[in-house]
Amino acid sequence: MPTVSKSNDVNIRELIFEGYVIPYRVDSAKENIVVLGMFSENEWKL
Image 1 (cartoon, rainbow, N blue to C red):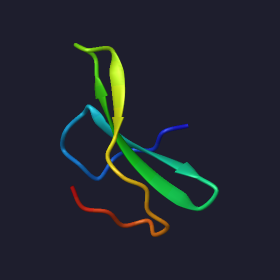
Image 2: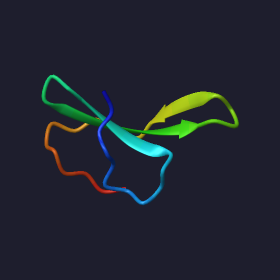
Image 3: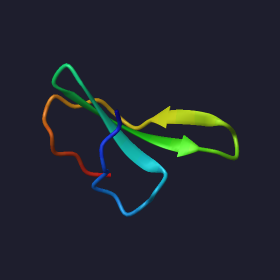
Image 4: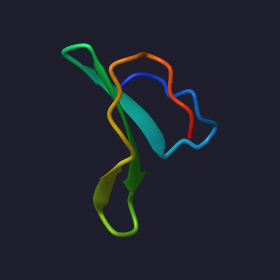
């Protein structure tokens, strides 16, 4: 389940999976998801 993002943009979310944090952006206009990165730490900056 996606957690609350550290970003102010409501379209940017993060997924935590097996110790990795995967921030992603939901583009509803193009109906796709863009992965912004994958980190083994819980802190990330956009």
